[in-house]
Length: 204
Image (cartoon, rainbow, N blue to C red; front, top):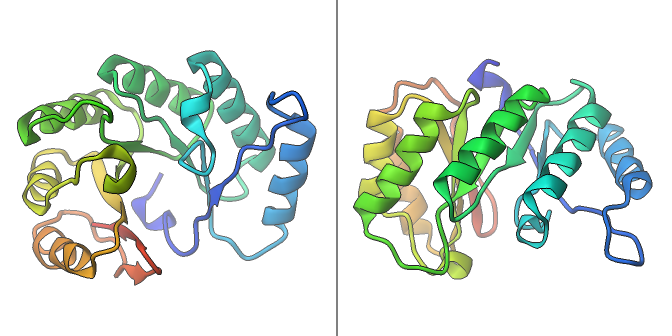
């Protein structure tokens, strides 16, 4: 897909569950159809709002497949493919490609604090293996570790398949530095980023 199609308002979509806490395809279908009737420019499934941490790998694949099939190419679809295990992220990214998603979004490993070098190697391995464009996801409040501007810049320089970042922070200076330092060296002709309240989605 063209990176230029990842523009505008791409909301994180909740995963609808039934009374037993299981994925509810009927309810999910209703939500997707209602969003398709609006002016949203795309969808993000299985991000934080999609509660990806609560599902097994098999469940995540089934949910992703349902959502992509329901959207049916009418809008771009980003699938959250994060995991603490690099190999699982690669598996989920390849699956997202197989079912017709347009990009994957990946938060850095959580629970264990890692060096920038380890995080770099995690993302680089994923970017080299993923058939789809990769969006970084920085959410330090939940992961316990910030993606530094220097790290993001290095990834942007070394990994053409990493095309942007969702920067969920409460510090505008971090977002500003990414715009000034990363966007300037990027090879991707993405649009200027638009500011949210505490979230910045930036295509390089």
